[in-house]
Image (cartoon, rainbow, N blue to C red; front, side, top):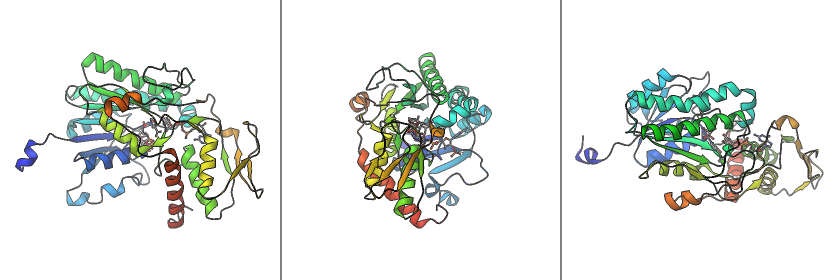
Length: 359
Ligand code: NDP
Ligand code: GDR
């Protein structure tokens, strides 16, 4: 051990959900800050590490800064074993069945992973005797606000979850608060509003739109089927949000924080802006949800509404107030909504041009 190493505090992070959008950006950020990052990945019949592949290419040399462990949020024994072996200084619980619409079809599974999963990690921390040594981040969500009670939504706005996903996340939110108070743990809920990127899963609405726009740009003739295009979301860039997660674990005392842009946009605006990137001006045929679609000037119909994508209960409006995070964490948004759309469309065009399989 060198003299420099011996004076540095240990920086070892464990991330569940490391293969997801946020997990990949957070890993990059933590490695850039000198952390050794351990991640939990699920066994899959095909590769599920495409978002983090670039980070573990030198693993066989033994010099990798990222180490992966097979595990699952439904398996307590495995979580205890990983945490005791890794002995992390920070744990980020990002793993989840994160699709709101899918949670209506898989409600029990979603509750198990998204709700009980958080409890299993908290208990594993205690079983390893680390409750006063490790700092814990829970991926809470603006979906907790659900049916509009107050706008903009802040840390003091009451919750009214509108999906099995949100109800499961509400359990995780409160069990964290309870363990923080009961066992004096350093644990924070990050109540994050929607954040997107070129790494966003393709079934979330923003990426579904930008992938489609890329196909139109490259000459494909298809129809994009969407659900509720009047829903409004506060959309930021995932890169900015993972920085906020890290900041929450670097404070003197643990608290819960909203991360949001403070702007809201309807889904239909995301569609318009994305098409604008390829110089198509959208003219909508109707205003309501019963519309058949819209026409571009030449009469080509690109988008139609398919009720299949409606949710049994919808979250109509999300608009966050990030004042507390700005004030206490000095957290700032660096990437604007317009730049987010621009980057996502440009990257999808690039992927489509370069990747045959993607076609
Ligand atoms: P993704 O859907 O991209 O990633 C989810 C991750 O969880 C993947 O790595 C997935 O693994 C893993 N996972 C799923 N089920 C399990 C399980 N049973 N055990 C262990 N790991 C599992 O989500 P995001 O990166 O977008 O979001 C990260 C977290 O933040 C999630 O908890 C989400 O609910 C929450 N959140 C996200 C917001 C957003 O706008 N992105 C906003 C607010 C909260 P695999 O790759 O194998 O599927
Ligand atoms: P959301 O994201 O439910 O906000 O959850 P999603 O992109 O799935 O939906 C946003 C809004 O768009 C409407 N919508 C459609 N959604 C999808 N997926 N597909 C469609 O075709 C479609 N058409 C319209 C939806 O009804 C909704 O109103 C995301 C996830 O990342 C959660 O894990 C996270 O907690 C929240 O953001 C904050």
